[in-house]
Length: 242
Image 1 (cartoon, rainbow, N blue to C red):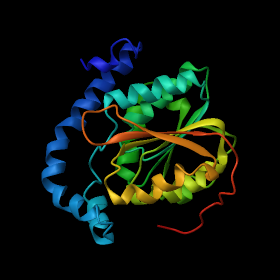
Image 2: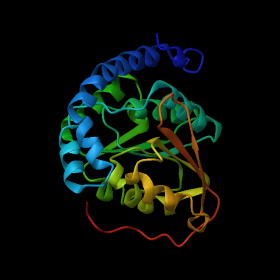
Image 3: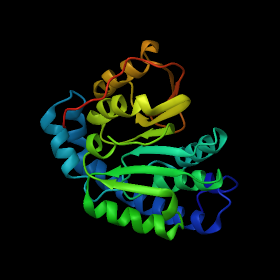
Image 4: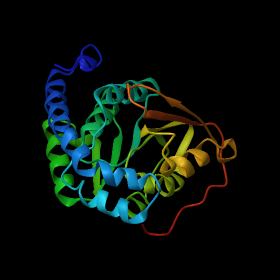
């Protein structure tokens, strides 16, 4: 039993499912680093070819949030009574389950997730169904710059957790829909890695309507960027494809 889930997640069926999914994700982590470690090193220099290779090799990988991050997102969504949540990077829906559970427990609403890989989206929907959360989740398949173009209603919570090089254009597109007081979580941010530089520079600039800080929930060098929308800005919708 994962200790972070005890006490925070009261739904026994979902807690058991999350334990199983986190175990499956953890079993892949060592393999991912052995296969892709050199490519991640190349990608620190923002080499386009390296990112192409990395993304292609993650088509069957979980690359999910850690339990502590999932619990934090669940509790934060409960604290702000989030009813409409957007997620960039659904993968096999581990994070989506935390978010869907929060929406359900807040009295209802919708989590809009997006996933590029058809097979992962299919498995994500099955995991959501096992959790009993299908009525609270809409998983869209395809490029996030297309699937998240139409978002009806104000967004309370945005989990920006997809491929690193797309974080900024997806954020720019979703940000105008985020309500004042709405939050953005960006997981596994490494400030020393230059590929995050433009994203962090933008979201930390108060002229763009957000106040932001890096939180350290895990033991490594990576942290979680926690941002709150405090003002409207002149951000425009991004129309280019990646």
